[in-house]
Amino acid sequence: MADRYTVKAKVISQKGNCVYGHKVGDEWVISRTTPAGICMSAFNSFFPDLRALMFGGILPWSDDPDAVTVACPDAENPLVFELRRIRKE
Image (cartoon, rainbow, N blue to C red; front, side, top):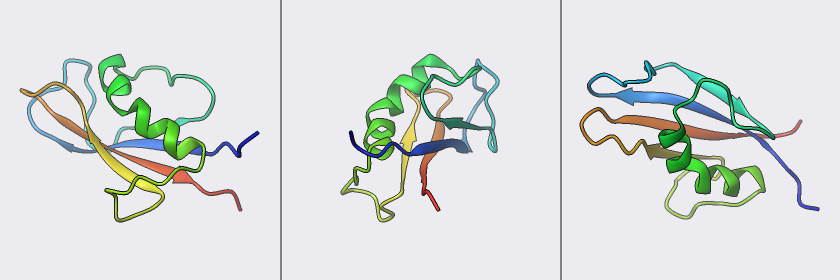
């Protein structure tokens, strides 16, 4: 089985007001289950990249092999999340 990494999702940018109350600085550590309190639309938007990072993948459009930024789908009140793989020590 492939190595599984934990990934941290953090809100790094916000315009407008998120209807779920998310704001810059909010973060969730994601391992084996969907984190409590996160908007499912935002989670769904970054899920493919999250899975790639969790299983050691590299996203070729990102300058950092351990991180990627993803926007939520609310075009009127967008949040941008950074997903960062937490390397095992």
